[in-house]
Each structure stands twice: as C-alpha cells, then as structure tokens.
Length: 543
Image (cartoon, rainbow, N blue to C red; front, side, top):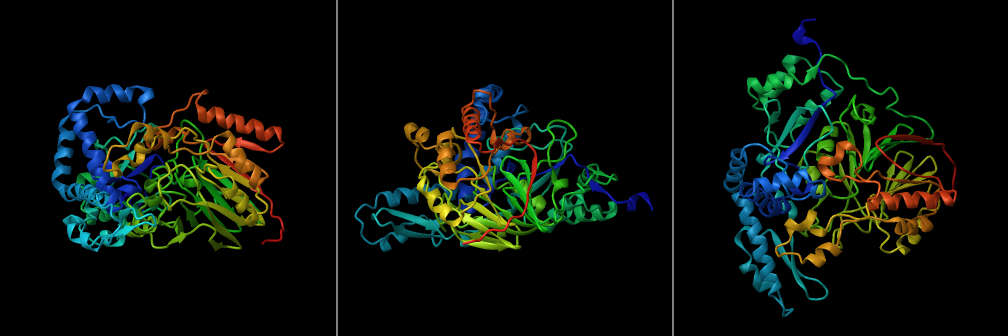
C-alpha cells in the first residue's frame, strides 16, 4: 500500500471547537434572537472594554476570585481585538439593529398599561421585528410579546456564515473561559468556514475511529474551501496509529451498566440500547486525571437526553462530534416564543440533527424494552419562565434511574407526586452547585434594562444544598445517591469557570449530604471524572 493510501485517524488529542463569529458557540448563540442580544450586549461590550482597559482585564483573569467574570483571557496584541470589533459592527450590523429593536419593543409594551386591545400597536413594532412577533397579554393584563422563532430561522436574522469549526491539537486540559473570551486562532489551528449542519463535520469527526486516506481527506477539505496550507495543517493532526478503542464499549447484558464521564454526563446501557445524558466528553489524555473519552462510547448512541439549555449541558462541541453516532435526541419542550426560552428542537434540527423529539413533564418515550420519562425540573434558572428544562427517569431491566441535573427542591411536594409514578428509585443523580452564579451571569444580555443588584444576587443559577437534596431523597426514597462532580473535572474549566476549595460551599454541602446519607445506611458518593457500575435485572410490577 502506498503511503498516501494508508489509513489515517484523528490523533486522540485533537479537539474541535464550534465558533460563532470567532466566539465559542453554545445554544444561545444559535437561536437568532438570543444570538443578537448576546452579540450586542455581551460580545461588543467585552471587546470595547478590553480595548479601553486591557491591563484591567489581564489582572482580573489572573485573580482566581474573578474567574468566570466577564473579562477577556487574552494577552496578545490589541489589533486582532479591534479587527474583531470592527468586523462585528459591520458584518453583524443586522443583529445589532435587531437587539436595539427588542429594547424598543420592550419599552413600547411597558408603556401599554390600559389593558385594552393590542391590535393598534402592530404598526409601532420596530421594523426589524415586524411579522416576527405576536403581541400578547397574560391573564393579569400584563403586555408582552413572543417570537415566531421558526420564521426567524428562515430569515436573514439567521446567518450561518458566522459559524465555523476549529480543529487543534491540545497538550493539556487548560483552556481559557470561553463565555467572555473570543477564540483567536494560532498558526497551528485549522479553521473551516462551514455551517454546523455541514456533513463534513460528521466525516471529519468520524475519523477518530473510522480512517480515511490522505487524498480523500484532502479532497473533502478542498471541497470545503480550505487552501493547501490549511489542508496540510489538518493532515498534521492525523496519525496512522489506530485508536485504542474500549473493547467493552458495547454492553448487551441483561442488567443495566452505568458509566459516568464527568460533570453531568452519564451513559446508561441495557440489552444493546445506549442512552447518553447531557454529553460533555473529554478528548483522550495520557496525562492528568483518568477518564472515559470518545473511545469509550458505543458505535451507536440510540438516545441522547438533554436536560436544559445551559452551556455546560447542551455542549455543541460534543454533540456535533457525536452526530454521526446519534439515533435520536430528546429535549424538553420549550414555551415557543419567549426570548429567554429558545426551542432546543428548532436549534438542533437547524444545525443538522435529523431526529429530535420534544418531551414534556410526565410524558414517556419507549426505549428498547423500557422507557424514558420526562420529570419536572425546578430551580437553577433564576426564577425565569423557562420551560425547556427537564429531568429524566429511565426504566430498564426493572430498574429506575433518576437524573435530576441541577434541580432544587423549591417545592418538595413535587417529588412526592413524582413517587406515585416511580415507586422504586434504584439510583438518584443530583447536583449540589448550591451557590450558583447571579441571574445576570448567563441571562444578563437578554435584559434591556439594568438588573438591580439586590435582584441579581437574590435570583441565582443554583441547584440543591444538603437540606433541599434531603427533601428530595426523603420523598423519592432512592436505594443509592450519586452527586455530580459539579464541574470539578479539569477539562471543564473553560465552560464552567468553577474552581472549588475544601471550604467551598458546594463541597461542604455535598460532604454533609454524603455523611447524612451514610448515617441512614444509604449508599452515597460524590462522583469525579470516571465511574462504572452494573445493576442486575429485577422483575417488578409497573404502574
């Protein structure tokens, strides 16, 4: 075989980042309305601030106490920052005008206090929004509006030319915090100006396990517009060495195998069916913390379950790399139109996922010989009216596994009602990130007026603490409890910004929960990086 025809694989250390206008892409940067607001009210402001006060930003990112703040983690020349700002003001002028129009419409609706018909206001809707919004009252005669989101995707307000992907070889888990820092390329990166729906992404990411020849890969890249230099840099990311696939990645047993991949990512396998929750998969690493990686996943993932549209749970970086493996994605049903609650189904279908199913609370979906049950998810959204959030129950082999993500027991009786549907909970997964960022940290760019500090600090993106988690445990009566690692894994700092000490409240609270569970003879563990266990099959009468 000629060297040029020898099969090539992506190196295990290669990462792929999805980008939106040179910023790390996450769910809110896909939906046209939210991406416009974030561009105008976060990206532009951060760039302007950095150009005015670069030393302030550099000092802030060096201060551990300021980690996760809206400061650029960048130490290079100012010229690329100015160029990105200029390009944003010119190339995304329509999005910036859209954001101004949203503020104008909010002001218009706030002035409508008489409770009478809204029909006469449509002529006053700002031009960029005309035909894309419906004006409405709630039952308390408070005026508002909703977007016709599907129509926005089918308009100039959705510009997929802003999307691209970057391949690079990484030597460690350390990456800058991406919500506040644009991703400037270095000389070794390979940027491909292709939309997220491009089939090329599937071809290239499949190279982790399915090889192709050098001429074939070069042809794919050339067809995507990559020049000879970019083609060569991509080929430098390849190896002739086949990957070390986990021989046990498939599971056909009668029981239930559970694999924890870090953060909130759990793989449930039974009788050849694989269900993956909130995938955030690490690249393979021979240094640092032992972990599962892409090579430990089965060749086919029958179901992916997404709990909520936060950047550490709907990880486009992982989802796009798994698209060629995924049979079906299950997402929570959105409220259809509110700015703060964009549709996950619309977003995922638009970027190339063909089979996306919305599930509502207490709706179930048959999965192999078992079922996937949507469960209420209270908390972690700063009291905003967001419907696209869902916990899940998975029943297989007679077992019930419940995944509560970042739920908080704001109303403990909800879990008593849940118990009537799920009588025997074998395994409960729950997060205890009980501090949580303030409302403005994630949702601030969607507001058109300043958020009072007292409101911002009161309404937080927090999940359970020890006592509230025990409220859930007391009502669901699980046979075992697992606390998520809450972003402790070193490869997640770029997206969560979390860094805990022994006296950090989430660590203290989760330690207390584990102690109190063990005092009841209830098995409990805080997860970290990697875990595997198998539950034997049982026979139970189901409701």
